[in-house]
Image (cartoon, rainbow, N blue to C red):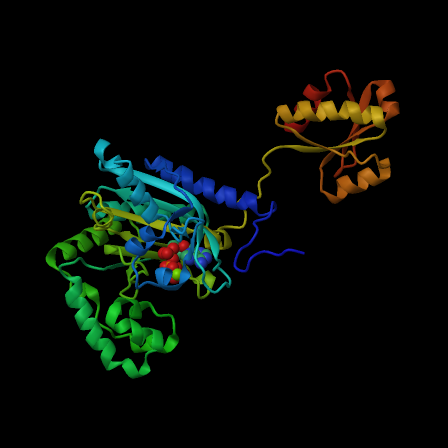
Length: 418
Ligand code: ATP
Ligand code: MG
């Protein structure tokens, strides 16, 4: 038997109502705040991700699904959505009409990581971006929407963690300071951290190895090195969050694994996911549009990890039955033919009728209806056709009623929807 590729998975019919309910809640919230859907391709030129995410990041170094297509051009299955959205914003000059574009997209992302709980090689994100706004209020709006969403989804222990990465004026100074600190701890840090010290020292701050975390506990905080503009921006963020009653923790450890971030960065973390505790990651990327060849336009955004959100959202989501369902036990060819046309008409009326086409005995059909948990069963055989009335059985109370065949679709609809 052919099996799934490792790290990939099926989301089965039994699970999809929950996924849909969660996606629907999120999307309708974002639409209420004026965000519009954008759809971007799953494949892009490798260069797009290499240049935007950064060569020295985990994603580009070792996680991307990159391969030459049949003509030898290097293409990559998207590991995230921001780069594509920015490419699209530039390519279609969306900024020409209005630089402010608020968009969202959802779909699969691909990263070749070690599969484990909450970590897959194909996973799903809802990605939300605000292009064209420099003010920290845009960052606050994103965090506010996220906290609102998690509340609507009954996620109880979500916490916003915020930090700043400064800008090209103040980050280099901090990098040097941090690098020095890392050198003083070189002997206790893991080999990855020591390798990163030179090229990307900020990444050492979010190493998950316990001894590294311990060694970095009293590392300097970038918040002490911000330039006055970045400091003002960060203050505007924290003050506006407080005004909206959004609780947050300032967390100097979060640095995010992508190079394009500037100033505000944030994660939503929960206690219930073990090591994979981040359900959302986001931040500001004021240089990316320009870096990818567009005008100098600031932007900010986030990506929700849907696989993780589905794990932690309230259990009632997606359990509500959308439409009434009835099982039709038809015995004999003529009954089946009649019932088939009733079931089609019922479908058009929004009543889902499960007609058994196996031609089995009444006893077998009732057994199946019971096993599948139907509340109502319509029974029709030669007798019922002759009397021009079918039996409607309530499987819970065992009560049986006769429903005339004339006007049966209307009758059943009324009986089952009131
Ligand atoms: P992590 O620290 O868990 O590796 P990340 O910083 O790499 O996360 P982002 O690139 O910020 O993740 O993506 C945003 C969100 O997407 C994450 O918070 C997480 O919920 C989800 N996510 C990222 N990688 C995976 C994965 N391999 N499988 C499932 N969800 C993922
Ligand atoms: Mg990661």
